Length: 332
Image (cartoon, rainbow, N blue to C red; front, side):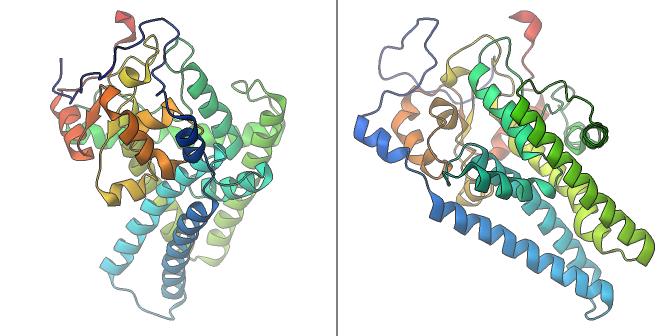
């Protein structure tokens, strides 16, 4: 038993096996919450693009000798880029739900660009993530980012797990399979399969061009502006964003979102950085609600939620101390 904050239900819960804990909202409120948010998403997307453009421009000018960045300025720029690459994956998440734009083609194009910096196929991610929403709380539940959860009860162990080099090996294999026309066995939908292969092939071409440019010119630009931020900053940052969502909770046989999902009532900086995904219980309870409206949905149904942390530090302190442990599926 942990000290994770819990709140008593204000109404008698439905104990039937079909109950997933979705809030019962007024029809007008539900309609309002489900309205797409194209302006909000465009602003956040443009902001991320601007930060990446500024960071890459500074590193490119330094690489060409036009300006001379100090070592700490370079380091801060690399860290900033890596953090925004992980932030872009959270924007990719909103696009795959169609929260901002009705056009699936536009969502895919923007989602492809979001995923480029961490080599996350939009269509592959979308297929598995929507499947995760359907099967959460059942034995069929799985996630696209199957990050390691065991052996993270110390800062060093947590960092080691967060770096997760195995993901890049897997992505490399997926790119090769896509180029060779080999079936991606974890996608059963033909359209999603075709789209995912196309995206992995394009990622391979872009990555190969960047590597070739580096080898031919001797430039360090792509190494400093893309490869290092992606591997050493973006990957662990995204791990730290994703891990709290269901860690230590029964996401395989407990159908109720209020018990199998965790929300973190974070600072405004963390809310911006995670694009509202910190309120993950609200997101699962009504996935058609845009991330920008998750705070309102959270406020409406907070009293029913059983797993809430006040901030990310509280969660990770409990993980590193061993107070929170991975869920043992053998004990189901």
